[in-house]
Image (cartoon, rainbow, N blue to C red; front, side, top):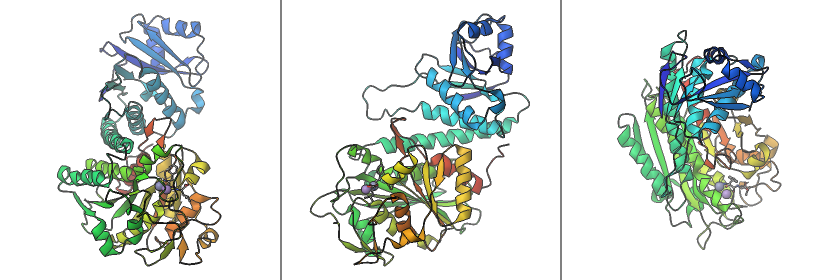
Length: 502
Ligand code: BES
Ligand code: ZN
Ligand code: MN
């Protein structure tokens, strides 16, 4: 996709489609109005004739408008001008691309940059537009003989001369880096388990070392290493699988103080989750190939960080293995001594994510982390609670909560805070060991899972993102790349490379 800038309302390029806004009461935007005058009122008569009013979701596609060089004009309803806000803006960009993507239109003249979005500036408008466009035009083609592509290949952003062109260029650069990372996260997430196993993710991780040799170092912890380290919990989950369990560690070192404490991201990387002996039903079991989306998000995040050259020390951990059933599986009732020394009684082998993560939480203490954030498709209960549009957030630190919720708001990567309650924590006491992996009464399952994790994260500032609902969706026909938008926004702020949004 090509993104260019233009100061002219009447572009010289033909064969494009111009996106024009109309507010309620048939109020054309400033530019819409100019074009209407040029067309000798043709546009407004067409609007009247088609009974378009300007409501959100209304649209009109015009062809060959008199005196206008653009081949098409897409007039998009924007609702009430007075109340035009962030969500309306995201909405109209979404709607326009949805309409155009199945036509033959290749080039778009983007005029929504003229709109006033409450509290947000041109940087944000451009960055978000590019992120949405790239998101909407994604197709998973890797494993198809007949590859389809959408026709749109060029966006020409109209930029009023009053805007800071430098800011616009930063927006384009950052959005392109973010979108390329999102595409990688989706591609990997959508791969099936027979291709995307732990070894595959390890191989992809090692490649980063060659692409960014100055900043990134990668190494693996294999099953033999895990045995030596006492990572019995992690090992138990992957024990029955033919695919070796591998934890890939991607270290990005670019802070001006080389030894600055790192921010650590841990991604749950179950390349397939059958449930184990507590086997899942066959309905939708194919979706459990997505149980590594936490790991793929961390992988994509590391790429974006390196591309944007963020002045931070960050470590990405892909905690990969496969939960299978068979004679060598771990069992309900088994008691496992985790690396931390806490003995865990397994009640349900399908609550395996927390079993893998608990050993990773102990292992990463050696890096002396500033902050630890895990990203995991951890519980169906989180999907019941929040649906497929909202990430679940749980944490032991109120400042980190604030920072993450703020990043969620700005990025549009919707996130909601759930509590970690001490009373609930107590209900994980085991009759035979220290704790159980699933509570007796597991209503509120997303919180119980976080309570379990919190036993292992006492020594540092930690947040947990449950992305069971948001990481893939029926609507986007596969992996979504979320919550990468939220995480990169959080890091841009942390690295003080955050551009003012107002
Ligand atoms: N990977 C699943 C959670 C999941 C469910 C992700 C649906 C995406 C969609 C996780 O390992 C799991 O199976 N959790 C169990 C926990 C239960 C046994 C306490 C669940 O949610 O049913
Ligand atoms: Zn799982
Ligand atoms: Mn499971």
